[in-house]
Amino acid sequence: MTAATRITSLRYVMIATGAIFAFGIYPLTQLWPAGWVWNAGQPSHYRMMIIGVYFVLGLCLLAASREPLANRSLIWFTVWSSVLHSVVMAVEAGMDPLERGHLIGDVPALLLVGIALAALTPRAATVTVSPSVGARRAA
Image (cartoon, rainbow, N blue to C red; front, side, top):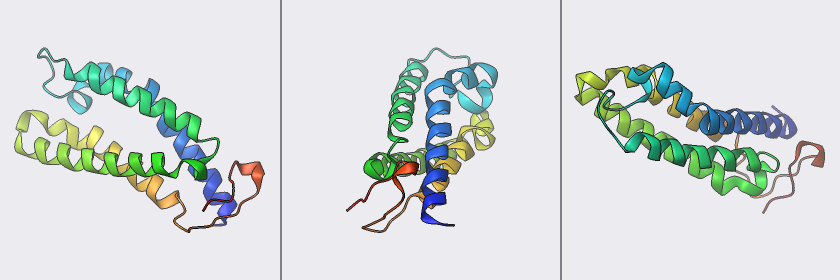
């Protein structure tokens, strides 16, 4: 994969992830609570708090997709927070039979986000790509 193709792919993944985080989490909690809502059916302030956090992260990813290399710290935050969140949820779902739906819902979804962004984000200290794909020389 060329550097330009990699950055373009990274941009598309950032846009898709940002859109889902910002505008898709709430609908998913309504359509499939067993895979997206913890302690479904019980009162919780947690759901709206986490939806708010992911809404803001999604908007930030959408904005950062214009210049991915200039926003690597946000990308790596998204990678590591998604992987850690996924692992913690997997452990919790594994220990609570009522939460096993998460093992086919939000757990693999967040792990996929982390893996996709990590695989596409360049690690080199200097990357030069055509400005037409929104990348700059990064140090």
